[in-house]
Length: 101
Image 1 (cartoon, one colour):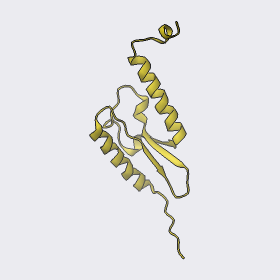
Image 2 (cartoon, rainbow, N blue to C red):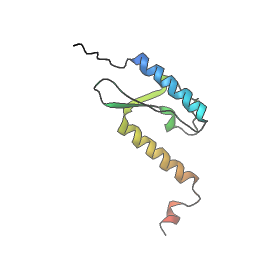
Image 3 (cartoon, one colour):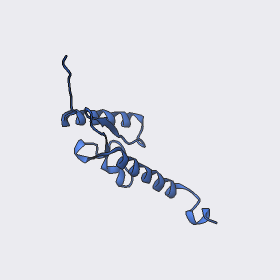
Image 4 (cartoon, rainbow, N blue to C red):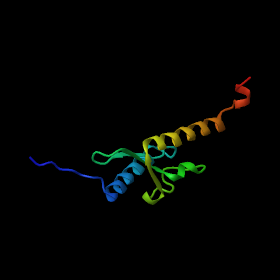
């Protein structure tokens, strides 16, 4: 019996990232890509654009694989959560001090 083991190469991740960017661009300018992948028997990883840490970014900005972070899924989720919270607090008509009253 033979078993095939395969590890995701950097080239494959870059290609998959390109597909994620293309899909995000098709979905609309407010969508940002994220690529979740798992190499053979490895931990899940998340590739996401560093541009999420900047103001006013879109999927078609800074989209090359060299402008991404390859992190744990937990790290990506923490950044995504903070971006959503930050976005909600800047667009909400109710300030946090008003909500506390």
